[in-house]
Image 1 (cartoon, rainbow, N blue to C red):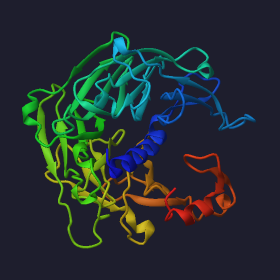
Image 2: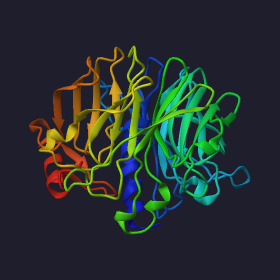
Image 3: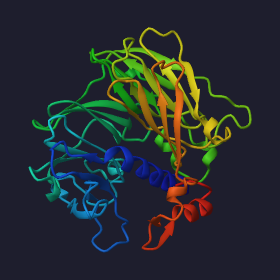
Image 4: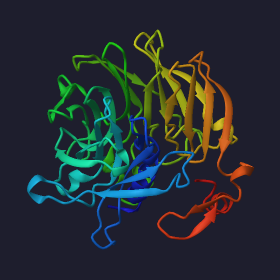
Length: 384
């Protein structure tokens, strides 16, 4: 793997640590599970789940309480390293913790790891089994009730289109593609997706993974499409987005927009979703009855319209009227979305300039050294 896929893997891992670490649904104690990777150079290296104290009143709040390692099992296609831990999720019934290996397929290993959540979640999850599901580049899990999930697979075993959307029942170990006539899914590299009340889904196409191999970032191909898939797996329609080519209109990495994040707006009477453009920093509004996507907001306004790579991860309030989002690996934005076509930014939190964080000590990635937010931002082009 070349230089850019290595950097991009680190970028994805940082992002997945935000979205994939979940609070146990049990009332007490409060812990956070983080699905993490370990460098192969570490003796007896193993990917693992970190159990973190998430009780704000605890004297060990934020500390790692323990780690639970994945153990190789050649006979069952399980490798303890090289999986590139990515997204994870907890089942609706709180019984299962699902984790995915973005690059497990490169070693010919299974890529979905199923864990049982104990009654006392501080003990850490118990590994149950691994699954080999249709597609490759395991991405986002969406709990859909009970022990069931939908899962986006970004590509096929050759790291190109088409990817897949997969159904998993963690209790019965059943897995299958939900797509009908997969040959209709051209240039299909799904990432973030949202599910409507009627069971249909909107999914954003992100990137063709094979183009990350090598050291020439101009060859990276981001997708410019999102799709509406009916409950029976039929492709209902494709939304096309225009990629701007004027200087400064994108972050300049590769070609295309890339939709890492797409989520349905809770309770929206029209079943609309937000799709976040990675390279252009725009949020678009799409829906079943809309003829074309609507550009809802250009988030780069919070940074003087400087375009930088941004996942734009979304966390909606349950009433669908507010949304929290990450932006440019630096900001957290709170917006009023009572009118989804015209979001209104209410608050911008900047990790690099907030005075309360200036002297807060943080660990430097891949080392045991400490620094502060202010110093880290200054040394890393204001990327946290």
